[in-house]
Length: 228
Image 1 (spheres, one colour):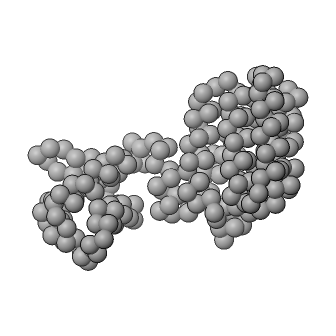
Image 2 (tube, rainbow, N blue to C red):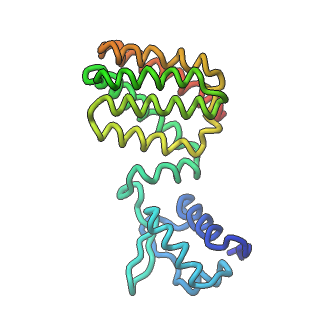
Image 3 (tube, rainbow, N blue to C red):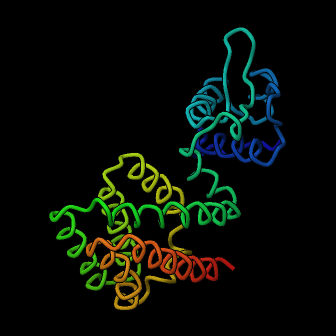
């Protein structure tokens, strides 16, 4: 094992161990080498190693049993969606799978919102849509667009949809600079999203679903093109 640089040692060790786990060097269900052996191999103290272990336990990649050792957790069987931001940073392959879920959930949210939207939420959605067209710069347009979708999820009256929307955005926001294609032109971004908001505000469930499916397919295609 290559000795790590001394700067930001816990961060560096955490990153190295995380990549080794996700790349399969430390296989799921196996125990890591004894702490002293592992610390010596990386050229760190056991205290530094314990700090890195603590972060990876919190992230859901490791589990430590007192007197037994530290084992690689089966995150695909036991983990939750909170792991997605880390997995996306590790491999962009996850983005395609996230978009697949995004399509299904996004269309259902728009359809449901159209049947439950309140007058106050119609006003909010209209204002947030206008903010997309008025935003300056791709990053600001993208973040304004996100707020429209959060509001659509709230309009369903179902808090699980709200949390799922947050989870999906949290998953790919860390790499959003590579997914900015649909948001470089504020006017175009506004016009692309407008049919979804208009159908929801009109209470047109079928129209909202159709508009959302088109919006999600169009933006997905542009974003994935940006990753190639």
